[in-house]
Length: 322
Ligand SMILES: Nc1nc2c(c(=O)[nH]1)N[C@H]1C(S)=C(S)[C@@H](COP(=O)(O)O)O[C@H]1N2
Ligand SMILES: [Mo]
Image 1: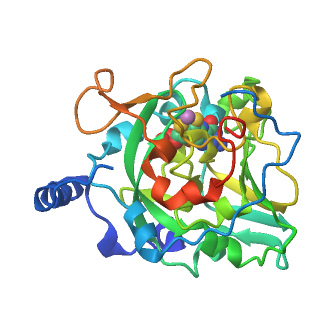
Image 2: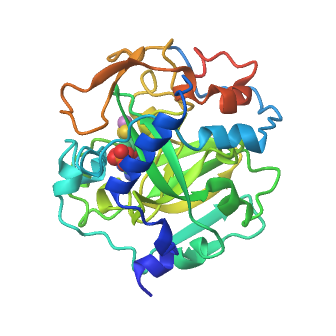
């Protein structure tokens, strides 16, 4: 089976970048664009999730944006994927060592249907849809990318998590011989990330299989990665090989490296600065201009997805739980 078959990307949804741009210029012309601390700790448990209801209409509002897209070129050559090295150009310049062939995802923990699932089987029951999301890196740059994929909740529900599943932990492939950056002890490999169960089940949380209608290139997290658009980019873990339903807040790589800099939640928040970078503004990498002179724009609370997600954190002190 070809990767395209495995990913079930419908041919008519493969839109060349030029067509995307045209379509979006048209949309922009049709409608006036709607404008859209430190000291946290992980020893204690955060308040339990509230019962958030997101209406389908509210959710759909978050599924796209009229902002100018980041080019395919920039989205696939300016990457953070430390397993291929710490510099932005390294992931795209690395040898093409990863392949989706034979890829499996191990699902375990508190769920009724754990198992080792071949990628094709994981994706087969689901329709691929497109989401145009902002992605905001904690380093202060951001992109707008048309992703292809599946709502994360749809995939997770198939494994029937039990009531003890309060968090979901994700792990990236660990293949030191294929991933030269793993020779550096930048992080405690394998790369690991996690979400609270209600965050993982939120309609905006997305399991991406592609961008710009094409399967994910290696540097963007082939063959599946998370996109959690209201959180800093590092929560959007790439090249996932395992998913675990757990009771306790899981280990996460960046939080482990520097807990004062990287909180477990890491919701985009212009009011809580990172010790080394302001989070009040961001350098938007979009369009065909130079990355270096990219527009500086204000960063929005929850990356502009507050209407959809703020309710998840009702009553939580966001300086403590940053
Ligand atoms: N496994 C893994 N996932 C990762 C990273 C990484 O180094 N390793 N970097 C993260 C960071 S810091 C960001 S900003 C995004 C970047 O995603 P993109 O390169 O597709 O834009 O991926 C995230 N996912
Ligand atoms: Mo990032």
